Image (cartoon, rainbow, N blue to C red; front, side, top):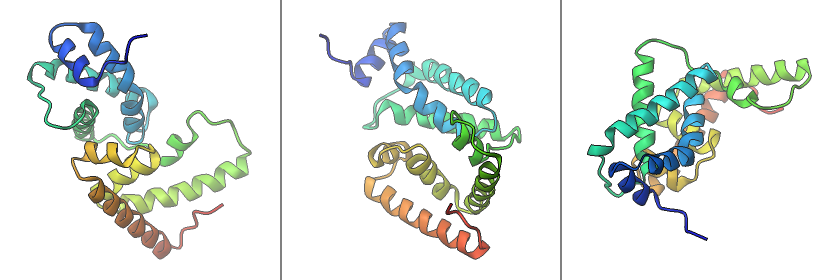
Length: 186
């Protein structure tokens, strides 16, 4: 049985012209990149299209790509953030947290859905008031459940800095929710 090749090996092979190697990177990272984009975009098809664009841009950037101590996934995340920046310049709305949360879940009773939508809308309003770094760390650590190590790599920060940032972000979010009198518990 052969070992799973590292990202570095796959990148080197892809840079040498082996398209299948980049295909393996695509299969390895499409889902996390798509899920990240899905938390930021209103439409699942837009998120899928943008994820494809991210991988196309990453493939086109391979000749100039250099490892600098960060994993390839951090490079993809940066490409995704840049694609989102381009997208926001066109003034498209972000997805509500409700759509992300309900994606792929079974249907519930209407009254439960309405109550949950009100709770999520309150959370969304409170999150929108947070600084961008706070919003980002909550998206990566809480919504996408990325490990601290990966979040740190993606945000180009130390793991300790991510832990502190997440703590401050959640504390600030909790205070904003309390100030608004929002209820987020069931």
